[in-house]
Image (cartoon, rainbow, N blue to C red; front, side):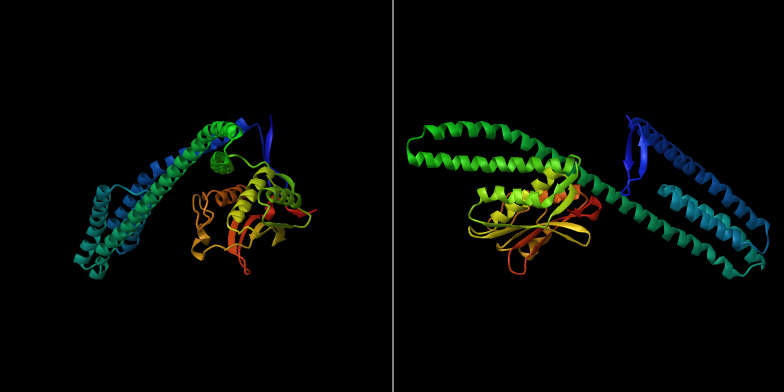
Length: 376
């Protein structure tokens, strides 16, 4: 089988059997690593030869000691900067270079062939080298800390993903069984009070089932590849509003979208819009209004859910798309808007949240122009 990668302009970037490409990539990686390792092995011997030649010139050439003197110290700093040595080796090297380059300067100054001020460069160059070493080691320590933090964050995210994935799968089976038995009990109840209690249980099971579904949707948004196709955005928003009119009939629903088509994964896009709509329903009153809006601006497609609820507290605006973050008197699980962000990022897009000037909140999913947007 032959596969290829195409750029935004449609030109073929790379083609060929996937295994062959993988093997070639691995071969290039191995060659690059071997080349880097060879350079590192040759670095110290090359510096040793260069420094020794210049040190010898300091003893041989009378009156021109300062040029090879500086060459020795500069090459030492470059060698250490490219491949830092252990601390003990660094001190021994600094001492050896100081003695080897300092002796001819002191001897010439003692004989009157050189001004004693030239000899003052011996401790100054050693001090400059040590300052450089201090900065390099600080940089190495900072890089090591950054790597540790990145690895720790990566492991934490992986543990969170595994937990959410397992929890969502494990919850669905007992919820389904409990729901089945509860529905049987509801059909058998004669007492109205008992029937109401069973309805409460069913409502709670519905909530648990919704949480498990959102957890699973969130994980799939992170893990599965995007299957993009040409999507009629206006039709998708109309379908979503029609479904939610039945589920939340006390809200006033409207759709404001021209004949707009967008290149996206339709199932993921629908999940994202549903999640934003659910958030709007939760934070509006019984007679509130919710608008599903689609528009193009600046070469980007904006898919927006606008409500007339209480809005978002300014301190919570930067956090509304974080997983498990929820606020306000109608706070939920903190998963809905995290799903919106995951879908946007899977499409190389972005999300934003703002308060509308007339009140309420605006949740926006923005698809970049590179996804192939257009008006029908």
